[in-house]
View 1: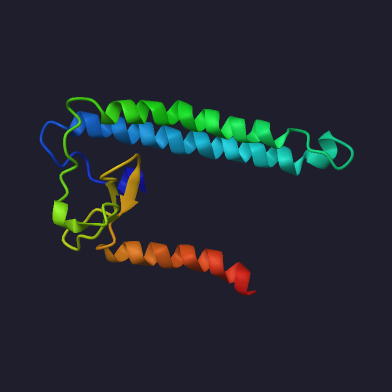
View 2 (view 1 turned 90 degrees about the horizontal axis):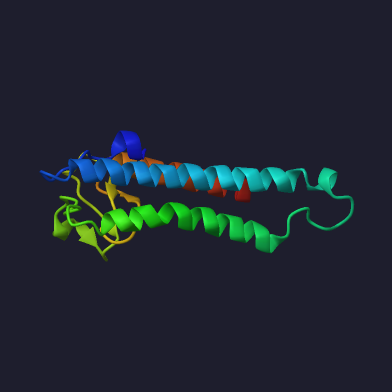
Length: 146
């Protein structure tokens, strides 16, 4: 969604920074996804790796791996967001509710850069975002109700 549904440098002169910021975010998401997949794979193979009730990899080591990967990929994002040429994201201030919720029906972008922090957020003014939120709730609630 970040690749297809987020704007490409709304402000003049920040297109290069926006592209680097987007790439750094995507790298972080992919790295964390692969790390979690590897850890879940090890947990699934745990009965074959270790006979008994223990874990093949201690919990503290799993948490340390997740934190190390996250820190390694968040650091370039934080560093790039502090660059002099990073500039504004180009979204109007009045469209940000509580500093974190972006609602702008006239903005066609589904995903926008977060005003504070790292990453992207959904434009709740876009109708497709409500469909996405509904589908996510459905995926979470259906197994609980069945």
